[in-house]
Amino acid sequence: MSEEDKLREELCRIGRRLYERHLTSGAGGSISARTSKNEVLIKPSGFSLADMQPENIIKLSLKGEVLSGRYPPSTDAPWHLMIYEMRTDINAIVHAHPPICGGFACAGVSLDIPTFTEVIIQIGRIPFMEYATPTTMDYAIKVAEHLKNANALLMKNHGIITLGSNLEQAFQRAELLEDFAKMILIAKILGGPILLPQEEINKLRTLESEKWRIKVVEELYR
Image (tube, rainbow, N blue to C red; front, side):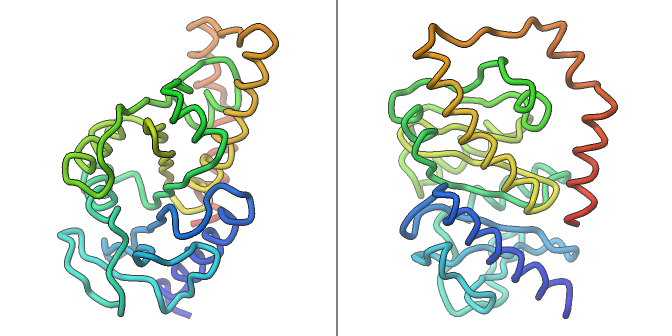
């Protein structure tokens, strides 16, 4: 099996996991991955991530030219491509509509709260993007700008985007972000989350044991 065929299979596997974990529903969300030839494989427009098959996936150049595929690419393709052009360290993107994160997005409440160690280490900061009409170029530009120096984004009245060096890492960040939203919701009920001091945040980001865990995900699922 070629590298591209393996990546197509992986996209479908991650799509099913997103659906099974209730991180998206219907035909919502989009996922993509960069190939070693600097081409992009992306979900076709209108397809459910639960049912997407390898042959359904669209291949694009970084300029947006359709290189193969029977269907139109996801309407999210413009900002996927902008991110790949801008971030050479990123090889996979997940966009989903998880319900708890979606609740925070619809309430206009940020999740950029330094309170849970795992999120600080595995994701880092979580910018909050003000509303922009999906599928427009204004929206695409705003998404790319917010992810210039971040690996996750919460979009007002919309959903989340997570990035990774591979599909597994991008998926794990989406999964962790939704669990974090649940934790923050519970913490708010119990009186509010307790923030970690900046000194401890800096320490967490330099832990050798945590660097190793991140490296494992980056290399194991390459």
